[in-house]
Image (cartoon, rainbow, N blue to C red; front, side, top):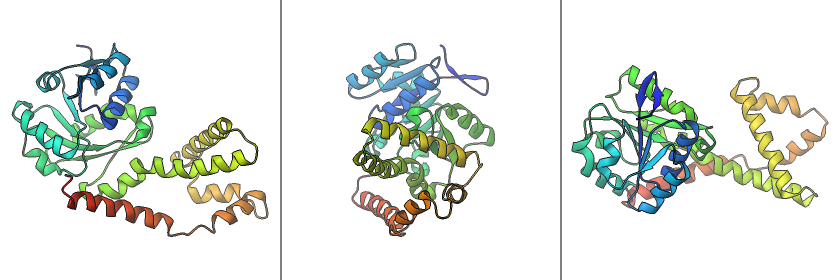
Length: 277
């Protein structure tokens, strides 16, 4: 079987659950590693089949969970909390010790996941930016993972973006920075786009220019040429037009993002307290 490589070792990948997250991950992996062997399973066959048809050389859809786990060395469980528990009850005894079990569900702990199987278990919080093989995906490893296993995991997944390891208890705030933030900053960018359109720029051109500006800004900061503060210092010349515009932005309530972060944390607690886990 043709597979993608991790540290020179042949591996095969499986995605169980092809909803929003599962479909995005499967697509990102298929684009980044077109020679990989990728198996997908979904309770609704049409969703899995659609992915397989889109990438016939890379993705194979299967009709049973057993076939999905038999074919994969690394298994991505892209499921809602209750569905995740149900699936783990069903497949736990069939999972091999050498398989990686990767859950995208943040609300079920690593300790609980380990009660279902003897495999290496971790949690992955992807971002929509992985669809472009960019951005950051967060990973939380259980204690079973040795250093070389962790390195192999990062090497394998780095094709779809930067992999950043965090402690499990920090998942909420870090998820806001990597997974929620594309929506937050898209909202701000859209407001900027609309304002430019009201001044005569067409929507498509404004979107293209803002998108490439954000790409360039990200490259400047990610490569540590500048940080956010020094970008402002370099661009906002005293008495210039940028400074004039920045003065208006600085009238924005500085507590805005405090409230954003408080809102996501509060909603997470409500979801957990409401039994949606």
